[in-house]
Length: 82
Image 1 (cartoon, helix red, strand yellow):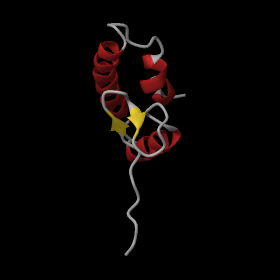
Image 2 (spheres, helix red, strand yellow):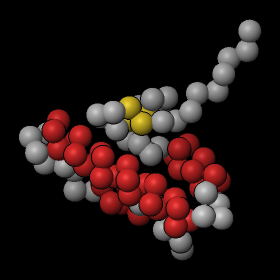
Image 3 (spheres, helix red, strand yellow):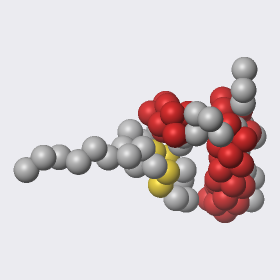
């Protein structure tokens, strides 16, 4: 029986990676997303911004209505065209 490769996806509402447990998007998720959206960087940024808005809401609920200040860098800052 072969073991399936697990995808590095977010766990809600903590927004940690399901596989490695670090803040999502983790390095593996970033690499996969960059490859998947190679020719569609704008679509990637829209996709990530949607997750950022969801994460801000959920993380604020966990931390007394205060979302983390670094969410823009975490979700979209790394994906902008250089």
